[in-house]
Image (cartoon, rainbow, N blue to C red):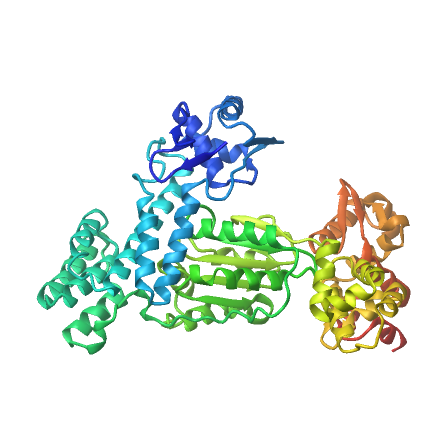
Length: 594
């Protein structure tokens, strides 16, 4: 069935071009919430907050189930029930919000590239999708209202981008009426005041342009008690001085546009679905349709940083005001200062967090933070409104961090892993001994870092048969998976050393159990400590991706991690946290002999 879901105005569902009767407002509010989080489960509690203002009634869950049943009848095969949640499935191109976001992103890319004609066409098409305010027929006062307001603000941004593109095309006189009407409805939009001043100035009406600044100043002072911002003030000063560069638009991107994303040089295979989901989530977050952060998560060696760089570079055009990549481990407490300095937005250290938030709220910036260890490190840095997005990369689960989506990367499948290996050594070499290539991939257990190390080793040893490396991996995989500055063992040690001696002992004991699996009660006895204490230690291993919990109270270590824990137990049975730190950058067989 062909459906088209529309939220840029009254909520509508079209079937073959004809509207479907959706029923009462609460049902439409539930549908709107499911659409805003399409293709992922939405908890009943969040649905209730979006349907009822204030405290939901005791009958909320029953009412939601009734509305869900009605939506199933209206939209066969679209709504899936999970324990405590519902998920609405839609395809690409079916939701007008997605179409709007794609068109605005394309328009902004064209604008950044000085392709004004394309920008006008794309942004004009995006604005034409709006039939009123976002979901304007829904009752107010619910949690949904904030997200709908953010969408409306994104529409205002798109209008102003469209106006800027028209100015670049020379439509100085044509855009003035539209800008005045825009400012009548939204008088606090400083960028719109700048655009109107530019339109008047370039039309030759310098006096009107200067008078417009005084109108803007009076409005901002009266309503907010604030003077105009630095960009509006600078534009006024430039007009007073008749600066010659006013023939080009003076927009909010007059400041530096830093772009320091790492190069996208590593092969990325088998991540198409995750890349599509993360892309969708970032664009939704940038529109104000959810929290302004996306988390890329996974264990050591799974390729999180490579994935995040590819994601950021794919979306760079959506964030024309700048893209910055930093590391918590490397940059630490200086992240806010580095971002402010990069945008020439520092102005001293006083209240730097407030200035950081102002920067992200007035521009479209993509901020990528790697090596995040705790939600507290990044929670204050999440953008508070539409426009900018924070991408967080971490080995930990970050379960309490409010993000638009979590992309949890797992090991690659066999085909993708072989493709990744072939990207380093050539498909002909892989095809020459497919069985040995499959064995190499199996020993690497789908971890991109392991495959990268193996690929680099084989690429520099063209005479080595793949079967030889497969044999070496079978004997001692972690020694093979160490080349120059890349080492899977080092990654495991980094994680374990942060947890200390108790975690190291627990991991050793867990690896020694049959199948690498045991209960907290069993391990507590071997650790000679209370069950609660042992469980806390084991949970810290799970949180750091050094073990997993297949069932409540049971813990397991598998694969290369079990190899690591076993050799650690054999060679350093009394390892302390300090000793673990000393293991970094040297193989265990050397450490044991020392």
